[in-house]
Image (cartoon, rainbow, N blue to C red; front, side, top):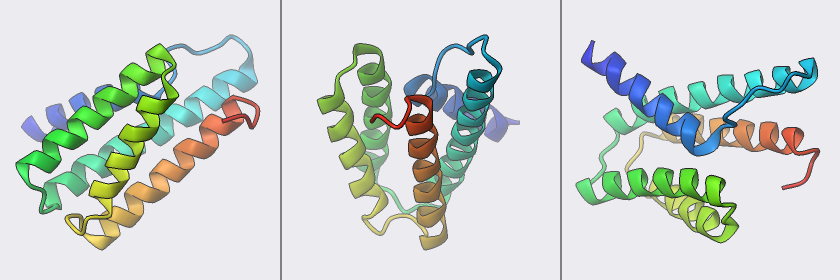
Length: 126
């Protein structure tokens, strides 16, 4: 039960950080947003599982939380520089060797799917 609450909390945080906050009325746009939500949900789940199995220091865990928070705020504020820095920090922790290789690969695939869905949402502009 506690793990489900943690996953739900992480998914909510990730959705707020990276995902769109509305679903348009156009069916194609709604479908794209649904795909983005599905991808975000998968990313949140894989990230949660990966962080549980990872050998992260408390400093790395806190940095990942700050990076996700920065991504959410930069999306709201349209601050691409802050988003780029947070994304780069996130990748450096992911590549630090603290994550299990299969979790690292899965999270990177999720991030790639999110990037592609976002590019589709914005008509290929990113």
